Image (cartoon, rainbow, N blue to C red; front, side):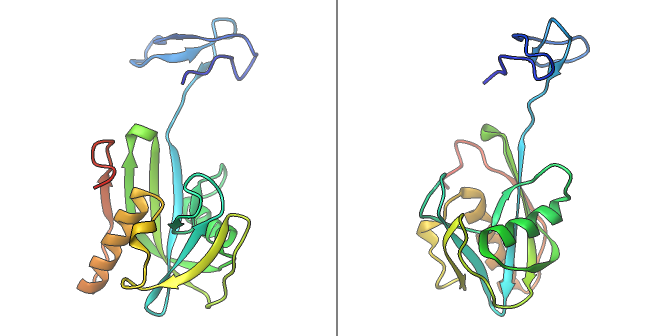
Length: 183
């Protein structure tokens, strides 16, 4: 959806390919400002405690009532690790320490990039928040697989438990397209 008004001067924009570019953009013909629209980055943690991981049941849309890892949009002026730890605190009142990057998933048809980290919970202290109606620790057999909110989270959880069985964790990079989203 193109941006209709200039973010700098408020004048209506036009869609055109700016000089030196190769993609149509919203351009202000009054002040010359080019509005670039870029993908949103979602960061979060696969937060471990003993042999379980922390999940949150969403208390907000989208996917209200479904389970997810503590994750959300990266904010300006924070690193991806800071954002992942902030989301863990915001969604589960849980403190964690990053272990390593685990999953990088591009979802171009909805302009999102997921970056999930393996993390170690500081302790077994967590609780619900405005964003989560339930929070709990799950192993592979108790995890509510059919109630996972997002394809990127489900794929990351599948890779996590595969790696856990193998005894070695790797960085997983993949793409979810509209045609493969529910597979």
